[in-house]
Length: 409
Image (cartoon, rainbow, N blue to C red; front, side):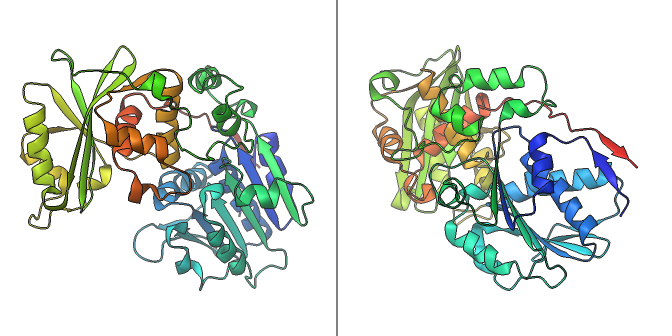
């Protein structure tokens, strides 16, 4: 493979030059974690042109929309011939004699039969410790004597990553911490906008998401910035303002929150919860039409509803059913759970989200949801509120990230 030099940041160079068996790069937003993985993979191929590399992420969405997308864009920018198979059971990218296997850690047992020379994990801190142990058992490929595993991630409280990398006394392990402000390639104003949105540099959320530090952020309630005295106040729907309805589809439960966004503040005025016999998309749509008759209504649903069919008596998807009832459904793409939760948390901190006392189940979820809970099993209404806040005012500004320059030699 032709050698190509890149202008890399200090923490990216440190990753590529590290000789330890396991490397953990903790980075804030915009530190180029996925780009670092791409560059590290190229360095491994240059060292061992005939190798098997296992590339993973905590979720399939993260793997394809960020990790693989960044890798393929780097390959195309460098004009490196490659073949990508991104559908079917055996997803992979082939570069010369190197095969890059693509797996999500959502079903990590599927990886047990794989043998790899190198392994890279994106957003590793959000993976289960059991998944990490399975990955370690896969690092036994026969094409190199110097196996290596790279973890890139934002921190996630004091979990397995802290226990294994954050307490010193590392044996054949290396911890590299990167801050958002270290990336000189970010657009002007990106960092200052993030600091303002996260409530200042000293806020726990900023320490984790922008400084790459281990913070006890998710001990107890996920929404630890919610304050009932501040964020719960009477609010009624206003006829002259549009109503945004966050929707979450489930086979045994249908949930929605009715929200208005006025002068930068979200007002959650009404919740809708259908269970048992009425838990179907037709009844949910009818309920929304009944409750919001005479209002300008736009739905912000769980984007998986474009394919899912929770109503067994219909061949239509959930979103198709809602549209067939005459409801306006906005185009959506589910954010990462962490991004959605952080967006809602900061809205609480900045007094930009108010919930009417009548929304008792929504308030209960927000006050009781723990990092130990499986969100999809115990949390639904808070999710719908998160869909609305993320769609209308996402925490992370949508800036095009400037990629480092490359020099062909």
